[in-house]
Image (cartoon, rainbow, N blue to C red):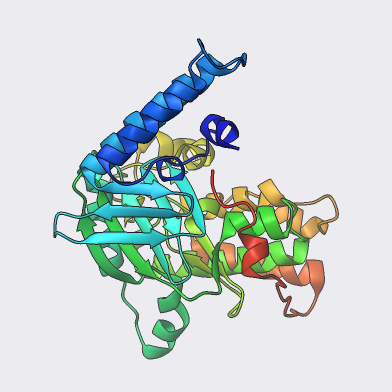
Length: 335
């Protein structure tokens, strides 16, 4: 029903108006006549006109800037004269902008005043190195694979990543597949993968400063965690931090907060905080003890502690398969 669509805060401008100024104006005029409080006998008439006007104003601005959207679709005009037509499955807004997840791509869009973070994302990814082919084979696909970069006509900054279809946002998997309660053995292997990444970063002399649920993705085929977001906050270890998200700032050690110097302890604490957020009451005590324990400066030492906690908790390691599908993961697709 049109009224429900107009009043729904998740409605996109393209769900009501076409991508044409004249046609949009005609539709707006007709709907205003239809739902005007003087002629439409409904207590919501004023709210309908108010919401309709906001959508119309947003539509005209979108047409002018070349950033058009409707449900699960957005078109963005770039300064290169091209248009990015994005049919997406999942959309998430974060503190620097937003991102869209498609079957084979992830598109990060940084707000106009966040270019330094956009630049840092590219810079830090290009610094990643591998000591040998074995290390490269294991880790390379866990990190962003940038295929293009753009500036938009409305002064935003875009990074396009490639991905395989089995790679899903970690938040979507936790909320829609596990209903917000991660079974402890699944949580255990996720933590293991993240600690492995921390050890890799340590070898590279980097601190990520952005390990949280919204910057991580899951490959169900390869049973891995990919760290694709958050690189906008990454620096060399012992360098000055350039920022972090509020959730990570809240768990940073006091000395790191005071000095604002990047330390690998922040990444390990971020992983433990993730574990504590989704831990269940049935988790073995050794598992709980690790998540609540004090963190050493070395990621390598923390990895050893975690390996012992796993053995004490479950004995010999076993493969735990995630059973899911695209429709289940994306049954709720936005914030």
